[in-house]
Image (cartoon, rainbow, N blue to C red; front, side, top):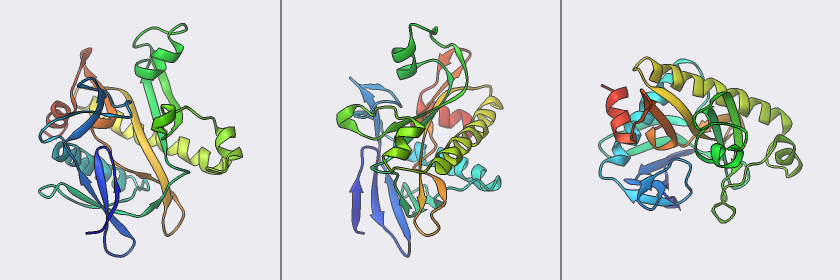
Length: 227
């Protein structure tokens, strides 16, 4: 297969038609050997992490399909650790959208003078640019529009989809006695229709989840959710 892009946690290959193939890796983001879904560097390699992430992603994307939420998902091959998806046009060089239910991570580091660790948040949506050199800076709706990355209307859609998708994940986790603190999502335009849709993955590698105040690692989370 023709390699299109080599990423930190997934490689992207050209597939049939307008589709691409994502190959999940065992690399996860973090720093100094500690997992961190908000980090922009590979922090460690965990055997089986790629397959675990794909199983979770397949589960959640199928939930989104049931609710007719637009995503790039087509099919998954767990044994091959690959996912076939529709091609997507990125917003600029890529955006990450975080939905926060608790004040942790980078939110706490920035705004800690005004909030307590773990303070409840009301599905706070934050958009950042995918830019490792600039440490993924947050960006506002107005700046996104003025820089030509997406229209004001697309931003409204992006925010609404983020809250809807995050709510689905939050409810699924709550049914298992788990609490979603935050989740990082990615969006793009459908390569054919131009519709804003969810891309990338939905797994333990891009969310913080706790059970009775104790953090659950991505692979343990997959076992709890899919048990």
